Length: 136
Image (tube, rainbow, N blue to C red; front, side, top):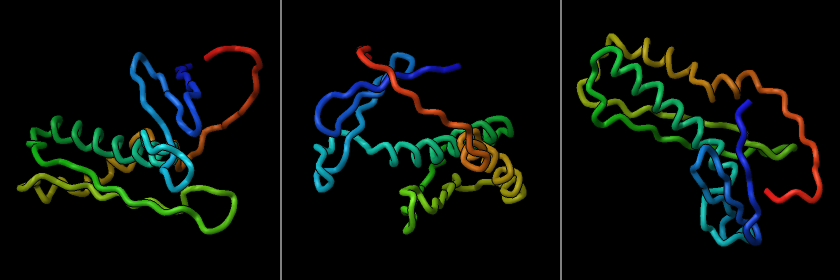
């Protein structure tokens, strides 16, 4: 099982440590944070957008398609009812100029099965426990 550590820094700011990489997570100033990093919800949506981009890039390399200009634009909104959660996500894959039209449907079929998308569609079991007196 893979592991990451999250360490409280100050206020709403945390440091996430993953395989030697560190990411600062915070809240916007208007929500009481210092805006020194994205929110956890933004990282959640960013994970999906980046996974779609990764799968698209791999598809293009596998099929000898130049990926110069490949990008992803992602918008999302929170659900209006409870519990608090992301209610809708729209992912737009920006294809390079000259992308072969005959490959478009195959590309979409591949990116719609990226690991993060699969994990949203078939949600993992989540168990939260507590532990006292341990420094992370």
